[in-house]
Image (cartoon, rainbow, N blue to C red):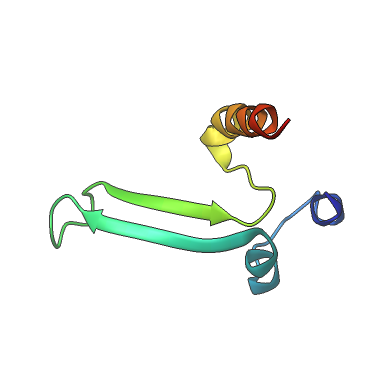
Length: 71
């Protein structure tokens, strides 16, 4: 939580922030080779706390489930 409190207003993504919040990024294969518009799966693995755009609600649900499992 200390990390999140220090970085509440991020205006620019730097290498330091990536190292603090993100463990790894996986980029999947494209559905069509050599296509710039083909869908491609990207997975972002966070270290401690991470919420990415439209997945914020889903991330909250997962965090709640994990809390229940460990309680």
